[in-house]
Image (tube, rainbow, N blue to C red; front, top):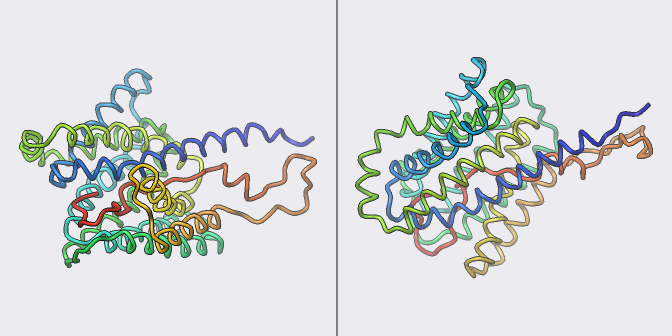
Length: 337
């Protein structure tokens, strides 16, 4: 007797919904970063964002009474918290002050490629041809979007190095987070990872106080928004989706963010994208579709409810993105991300 596929499909849809929340919130972050980044230095912005996120997550964690993460999860939580929540945000904020947006997008978007390589080496993730081909197509699209949305600006060796380090930290954080999700919940991993990042950013507390004294209210509110939604909520839904698929596939779907940012800037800000930007966004989405698809299962018909198609795989994880790796669509040089 064939198994009922409904529970598995329901789980896939839940993971897809969680990833969709992630992509929307992370893509929306660029508007808030534009405001907050003009008033806050890289370290202060990272600390303020992580502090707001840690408070929001802590309240939810206390209300839900999830308890402390198991001992087996602490290593992954500590590493991902230090690399992704802490070092990544500071390095990227700083790096994008030194280089133009196109260079930053080009360098930071090597992150998903590094995730695939590290996932294959450390987690045993498969690297099928479709995944590799999709990542290549999406990377080309991300580069096109980044270059087309760049304003005038230069690139320094320091800025490029910082963006490379940010990409490495992002990849390492994702790969470290995956095993922790095997023994701890998404909320536990995100809450304590965010707390680790905030603690490591405490040396910027003095700068945060000075910047907050001079910053306009809108910039401060945008920093709080970054902490509560693109950090607290979106990182939790990311962890939920990551726990139900491989790090390599989640990393590959990162490339959906440039297309979504282009659409958001068009609809919300009235910034009409040019032909190169539209073509790059289309390539990003095409690459994600290829990387998420799988060959049709053969030898079984749809009658027994077990046939697998690319469409059902898309429901597994709709989209997930690396936050703040897309340049803001503005003519002047980006200050932060």
